[in-house]
Length: 216
Image (tube, rainbow, N blue to C red; front, side):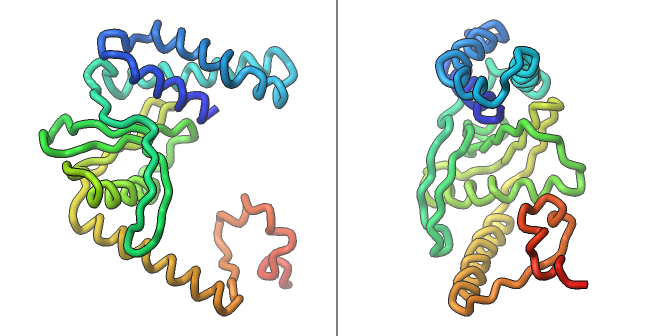
């Protein structure tokens, strides 16, 4: 559903501002679904009510865009932009959902990321920005204009979180990327991959065979 919603919003923002209406979004949702997703969805959801529920949930996410911004006042410079760049000596690949001229800084850019999942608790939001900080650090090296702000748009609940980009936050992000790569390389060389218990283990498919969880 996330891919479907992203594709609809990408097509919506390809229109000139005056045509970015809910009617346009509804038409694009119908067109994108039939052209690209109908066959795939029907292989996973066999019942008509399940398919209808899928499409309604996706539409609620799309419609909630109007709760957090006015699409006619957003001026994208890039949509679903691919990045391939070495950051801190580490080659990275990613896709930016959208970046625009900042509404608060004529010389800055804003990177926006759409989310269709559950809105996180406030104390966990900072971690969710890390991917966008990496994008901002890359954009800082390849763009004329610096990235000055980041946006996480949680469409399921119609909530937007923002974060200011600072030289300190970008420096920390670059350092963290380099450090993680060094740690991965070290473990590949030694063959030692220690397991660390956490709440995330409850969602791990390998928990039943994990040596840490197998110990009594």
